[in-house]
Amino acid sequence: MQFTYPAPGRSAAGRPPRDGPGVAARSRPLRWCWAIVGLYALKAHGVAQRNHEIGVRMALGARSAQVTWLFVRRTVVQLTLGLSLGIAGALSAGRLMFIRDTNPRDPITLAMVCGVLAAVALIASVLPARKAARIDPATALRAD
Image 1 (tube, rainbow, N blue to C red):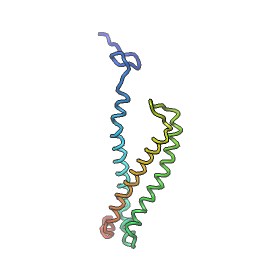
Image 2 (cartoon, helix red, strand yellow; image 1 turned 180 degrees about the vertical axis):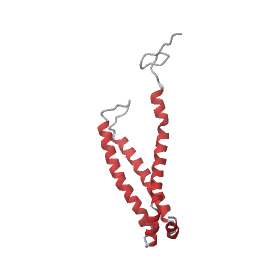
Image 3 (cartoon, rainbow, N blue to C red; image 1 turned 45 degrees about the vertical axis):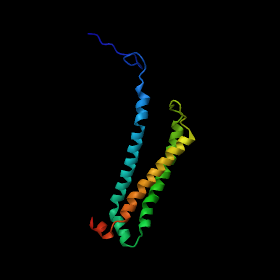
Image 4 (cartoon, helix red, strand yellow; image 1 turned 90 degrees about the vertical axis):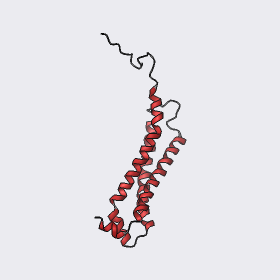
């Protein structure tokens, strides 16, 4: 019995494999969905960890808008730092990798990605914070 192996970079039929870029393109929406769900879960968990603090603030007279802004402000700081480091990394790594028919330094693509990530991060921050700001302070203080 003799086994034959295809040449490097060739499929068993003798031609280059064609499924690499197709698989990556088909899984792109799924990757975006996982990123959005993960970001929301991370922010919701951060708010849930601070329920006691929210209860104390509300019991001392903080308005729900102040409690919401507490979490949004933190997200804006993290977002600014993350986007600036991400853009710098994308521009510096852009010359190292080449994707067919794209420019890694395309300003429109960078702006769209930053806009989508900023919108998702802000929404993921506001929704759990607004929900937590509606909690009855006595319930939040009794939970611990």
